[in-house]
Image (cartoon, rainbow, N blue to C red; front, top):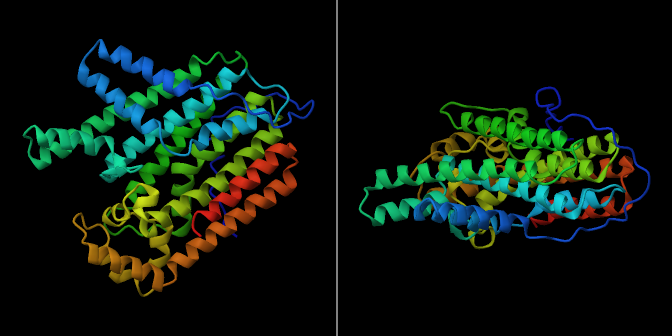
Length: 372
């Protein structure tokens, strides 16, 4: 069994609520108002009055926010619509948009940290900015630093925007503090996970299975699955017990999705994933995949390859072969299946609204389908 890291002792800023269930919500799906697009268009317009370059930066944030699966707003909608006392559609959409903008902020910063150059089949914000600097005459190092600086600024703007979306959403006064707490829990946990992830790349680092699972859960599962589901439950008036179960379920499913992302980061087709299949190897990321390999005789040779900034295609191919041959890939795939089984067991016992249970079962199935 995969024991997913619990953040309850260290990361418990989300306050319990007082709602009780009075009837079924029928799985109502709110209308999809383009809240995030409107917010970003307004910000871009404000920026134009300041400086054209600032407006272009907001345009880059908008570009990056428009792609992807939009799973976080979807989770907010699904949970909110399954309960009997949801906030108005516009409020639900604003909260969903806030979690998606938080995602934009975190991946922009992550791209800077990892020095990634591609995201969703397009240049990352830092790579696009570095290219502009290089084209204007900057040397490679200066251009790279310029790109990183622009990426940090863009991520900061998106992060502040996520809080602004919640604060200005029109949430009822009794629910607004709790939603802000959930957003804070998402950011707090993700920052802790990112720091663990960075620490694990230091020379000589040998994080164990539990440490890597903790980083995986904190960095991605909390903000992408746990807190959006809990936010939706709060918005719908779910009882405290359901909100707690939604959080546990989100941690488990989110961990499965991140483990799959780690697999796709090495074995995926960049044409399908929109992201490099070399950057994780180049950065020497200590994912569960690498940790599993390091417990085998292949670990020493793999360590000699990981973390090379200029890793060659031949070296990347050899690393993939090692991860496959030593059984690491199979071990992580089995962990994904175990997480999915745990999530299904939670759903069997949770007593959540039938429509929400059905939707969440499909989401759980999607975790394993991504690696088939």
